[in-house]
View 1 (cartoon, rainbow, N blue to C red):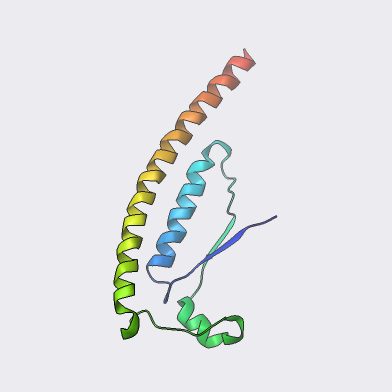
View 2 (cartoon, rainbow, N blue to C red):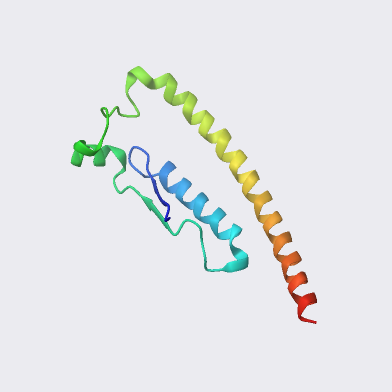
Amino acid sequence: MKTIVIFHCEFSQKRGPAMYQALRELDRRLHLHCYPQLFFTEIYILEGGYKQFHESQPHHCEGGYVPMADKNYKEDCREKFHDHKVQYKEFEVNKREAFLITQKDIVLQRGNIDSQEE
């Protein structure tokens, strides 16, 4: 079964593209041993963001659209941005660790292949 990922944020200018790039990099690193294969072969960014999508395709949206800068949710937005920054930093650390583990596995796999060929 094919998995398709669509990233978006309000305008698809920062968070959506950043998460797209982070997932693509992680997927590429985890599959260095079988380049160019990837698990997520189709990753997209919603052009114009959720705002534009909601305006042009409201029948595909459940619920309403609330702008990120809505005064009723200003504090929630500030907290979520803080949480997002913290989670992104943790993701970057985990990404580096995954890369190092993957590199180690590739070296071990190559060593096993070389010893089997002898």
